[in-house]
Image (cartoon, rainbow, N blue to C red; front, side):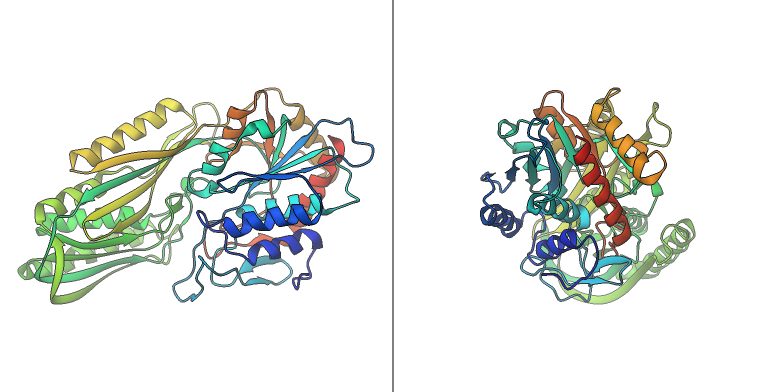
Length: 480
């Protein structure tokens, strides 16, 4: 079935099958049907809701009939990003997988190991006649990456288990036992554009490292949308700029790597604008030399051209808002050393004919800090003529002081690795919080293999780590 020729073979067979169909967020119909067809072919009971969430049921293996049911859980969707020269249509095409035996990656695109590896491992368990395991409820949700809508609207009455293994972590040796809650905020500003001949320039910010806005927000990497807002703010001090277009970032939960903005201004202010860009570039090249060594800030003069530009007052308000919005880590946990408590990421900036849209991802493990961030952001946006829509909210997953599952997982890990795992509460969002809200007394952990650079075109899956985590999963199932 697979041309990859890497172990564990069944897991990578199913990963390759998953990768053969498009499955970005909001485009999961084909992978949903793939899972349903998998169940039908094997005579396994399953249910699929109207959103596309799938639950597949499998009876216990011999000797485990009286054991408690276990949920294996992962999400079907992936963050789809591609390189500038990649011609693939990620709405229609599968991925081109490559391996050197050490890592697995996708040519020119993100890999989707987050969370394809969970789905592949669960399917491999469901497919096997030899793996010892208790009764299984394999739960595959949709749109985790864009608000966790699948888990939020899943009918938990279809589940009887109170033990859940979530395979949606990206660092081997870490067992996650809690996570932040989150929300998505959409800010929109009217443009009031009119077409006329104006002197224009294009601003480009590119080459940033990017990364996951939860797991990597503490690394203080530059955000191209934030940099663009600050650059526009400095230019607006020198000249009454007018916005023509603005675009940046790809997903609100990914740190923006590139942004482009076309502005119009008085030709007599040309030298002041160019000098402002040069000065801004120099300062930020120095500031981000370690975190974003490939940062490039460029200005290209377009001369006089006929464009649709917003008026100076509207442009000034949008620029003021972009200059003032918070960015990155907001608070650190007072209880857990080194844990980010609250953060904010401006992931996407976009322009259509009459609107500028800014899409933010907010995260916090403290409800009062989440409320504070939402209030602050709303205040900045509305004070500058914008509107705010808040959605995609999901609860924090609170750490349980007592957990039978966690104790068993630690014991299994020690038996395989010869050392204790790290127990962690993370700043990234996981669906576990929503499941814990739906299932009373749910005992849950999250784990997974090493996946460097998730949500980027540099995403890789560590093959040897996948083999070890697979063995850990099998041992853990055997112990439950």
